[in-house]
Length: 457
Image 1 (cartoon, rainbow, N blue to C red):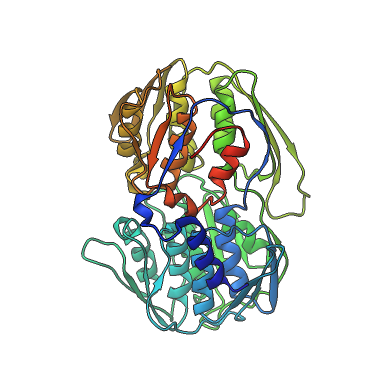
Image 2: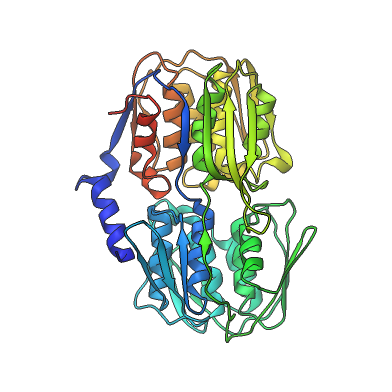
């Protein structure tokens, strides 16, 4: 099955011809039984396999690739650059790469809602001697892109943005030179953008990050034999010049997405005695800070590693057993490794005894939505006591979850899924609007929520 067909069919099945903004789900309280779950492939790793396999020589086979809109849009972009991609009947993805070369696409490339896809693709586009326009949906068009414009232009590319510093973004690539660049803000996406552009530069590109962020790009480049070095806060790659890298095709196994598993782990954590086990899930230490938070709040966490020492990524089985939770503080260096799960931490704060404080999380305000403002609004609408702060919030619990109003996702998949978990603890059904956004990362979410005993309609 071709990638474009997979994306078209997925949207048709999920949307059924309706305006996606009109879609709602009603989540009924109670019923969550726990159990054993397997979650879809990791979104961050799926993006990166599409890019690296797409510029390799030969055909790579990828097991566990996430067939959600964000990743399929990245895959379509790689096809526009000359790669070929198709799924077999078992969902295994094959990508015939371009051997390091990239052709100029016809017309703009729409990456939908994916900030990761946008910023990683920008790095590749900057390296090739082509002109490319990248765009996205309304939400993505509001997100800041000057943070990648600056380093790419320092390397020699020309990057055009709107006056507001947003997409559509037109990149005139090629002729890059290596630089040393200190990230103003910790960001795995900006770091990866610079590293990928550095593959096409003359000389060495070094990125210095203020706080360690997820390192999937570094791990995968090491696995394909790229000349990459990590020394503390410095990540360096030796460029291949405009001819591009000469990576060989290889097999990939994408582990389950920890950020998807987090919803089930959080639900179990807030239910004394209930347990959830997630199998074959990614356990990269720069992704799993939520497990430390759950332990601090009182839940029991058990981890069994099943990956081999030679695997680029660590994965295994995680079990969480619920308890009466107490509030905690999250902030500082753990924020980059917890950024996608912070809406869930806010939900747990509403269910725990005492105060839960989220700080140093200004980055939440420039995600698919302003996740600070949106979560504060939704938590209050369900009866929680919340104080909004510039860099986060303070939630005081335990709250009696009583829906005074419906919940709005504002087109943000993480908000929609996080609020569905809180709805399990409500006194009556909760209506959650704008839920089509969940398809960007976790199309099976509502089905799996039902499989775990929760009534959804």
